[in-house]
Length: 257
Ligand SMILES: Cc1cc2nc3c(=O)[nH]c(=O)nc-3n(C[C@H](O)[C@H](O)[C@H](O)COP(=O)(O)OP(=O)(O)OC[C@H]3O[C@@H](n4cnc5c(N)ncnc54)[C@H](O)[C@@H]3O)c2cc1C
Image (cartoon, rainbow, N blue to C red):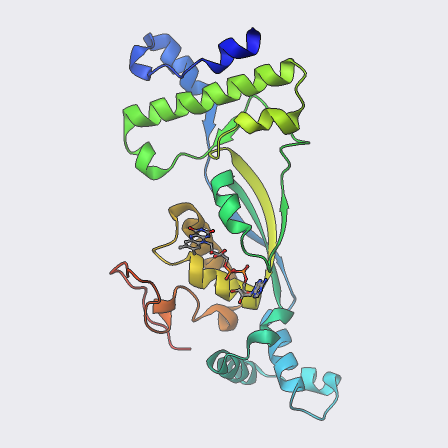
């Protein structure tokens, strides 16, 4: 039975492969690197939130409000909002990120954030081509022999995937053999309130390394676009005490609200 014999295959340990074959095996996969871009955001995101906040307590027209807003006023209002925890006005500013070269393991964690909007490259409609990208965790990458065995195992899964497709199995079923290491592409949108919450959980040293790396990059980009909205963002240690049961012992630099 064709499928049976394939399923019994185990990745050969690189040490057991003749030299040339080992090189060829390893060339079949592509290591990937994470790419995070802020592709769009609400125009004047800080002012949008500040105007919304002031509107709640003002009897003037919205046009008037918008005209008289100066940067110090925006700064002052946003500080008060963050300090008081009246964060709903921060929902008026949205930020859209494009992320590539992250694993499906990251995706599973990311999509737990229910207030965000996601579009993810489909494994039903997009077949993995010969250029199969996957993520190697640094703990594995650091150990050469282990990293090679890992790459071979991933490659074996990809080979089986190709065989399944050739046997007429639809991509939506063949993908079941693809490991969580497989790289994916995501566009995600979060409003500033959700982003602050996301950063508090995922920038923490206690968060898993891959989603943390992505969150830290997103925070840097968001801060550049709207410093007043994201200045005091990050794990709980940025603005107060650590909220973790087991603190990492390496707190972030404290930032005043
Ligand atoms: C370090 C770490 C370890 C984790 N480990 C695990 C684990 O072992 N197992 C596991 O299953 N998950 C785990 N998670 C995921 C975690 O439990 C949350 O699902 C994830 O962080 C999303 O958080 P959230 O629900 O606050 O955020 P979001 O979904 O982004 O929601 C934001 C906020 O909106 C409000 N909200 C959203 N939806 C509702 C609702 N339906 N009802 C009421 N309020 C709502 C809440 O105030 C919530 O905090 C882990 C997360 C982290 C950061």
